Amino acid sequence: MNFFEAIYQRSPIQIQNILVSMYGIHLKRQRYGKGFLKSYEKLCSSTKLSNNAIEQLHQKELMKVMLLATKNITAYKKLQNKLTIAPLENIRMFPITTKQEIRENKADYVNYDEDEFSVIFTSGSTGTPMAIEVSKDALKKNYAFFWRFLSQLNITREDKNITFAGRKIISDNQKEPPYWRFNYFMNNALFSSYHISEETIPHYIIGMEKFNPQYIDSYPSAIYQISEYINRKGICTSLCLKAIVTSSETLLPYQRKSIEQAFRCKVYDQYGSAEMCAFASQCEHGTYHIDPEYCYLEVVNEEGEVTDKGEVGDIICTGFINKRMPLIRYSIGDRGSIAESHCKCGRKGQTLTSLEGRKDDFILTPDGRKVGRLDPIYKGLTGIKESQIVQTSIDEIVVYLVRTPLHTSSCDRKLTEELNSRLGHSINVKIKHVTKLEKTSSGKFRAVVSLLESH
Ligand SMILES: [Zn+2]
Image (tube, rainbow, N blue to C red; front, side, top):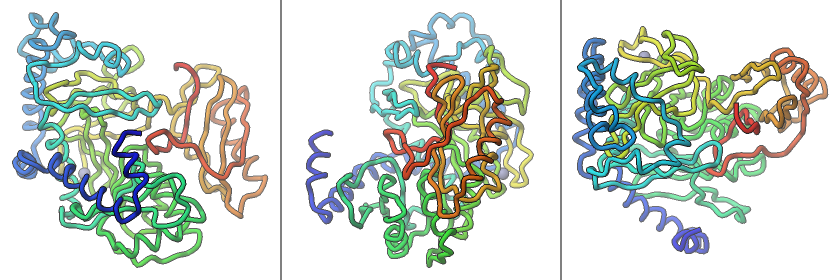
């Protein structure tokens, strides 16, 4: 804990609200200061590019980033004389880089000519943070993309909003409401993701109704916990939301259904990364459109070869907005597939047709299969409030269950059968009943956790 955090934690609630708001002034400047509006307006004027325009844009941006990298970045200088005039062929000459390589040899990936920058830390689902240096304007550009997405949902910057996120704004020792603080300068109430429980949810609902936001921005798992309670208790809230926006975790189908039912509005998921090398968001038809001005994405198989359209593999990103540390063919750690857009909304370009979640959110079976997206196993089962599957060894998984009063032993039996039918019978399935599930240090929830050293 740093000095400011220590002061914050010791301050009374009203002072904490003032400190959060003061920090809000800093954030506002950082995100929406000089350059933001220009980027935002430019993006809004090009929401419906043709396939041809998108291809030309990709070629131009790829060429720019490759020229910059081969000139200024140690890791890529050796490719300088090999570039041809065909950007898509060139990009495939670049090696795929991993988070580990960048963490261990960071200096080799920095463009030192770009000397105005700030450092951001990615939380990393494995709990290993990574420092990324971003050029001064990259954060504002990043928010310009985020606001293009929000503006398509008719959300404006004046709208009141609630955020459920990873920042620890409420002390662990606080046992009574309010479990939220206000950022007056951004019309924002920050609700704690860490204090949500069966006992505290009624207070959360009252707090949300009183604040009366126009939209909510949340990790799927946080808002899902509240929606599950609302639906189970048959509560009808007075909230009238334009949308709920989720990000940072894989949004599971049952979570979406529950959230949309409880809050009577649509959920729009956004896919991105703290490394600023990928950005996709859902349109009104639920399609994940990749923003062509932000990044170029590829999907590769186990051998690192680019897959056919629609085939699932590892997502590889090349980002266009960070000139200080442009990540090229960066393996972001997610699995999915990419196809050409045929969406009814009319947007062209690449779409993520399947977003399967973190690469390490897979169960490895003793016969060598990687099984992801296990959420269908819960279909039709009653009595489960939340659950998490943890692979502890190659032949054992533990399912942690938070039960509702409707839970019976047949639910555990069916769950075991479902898992064995997908993973094989050589995996031992243990079910443990708990009152709360583990989250990562940044407050994110992972539905499947693998404790195996490597896959
Ligand atoms: Zn669409």
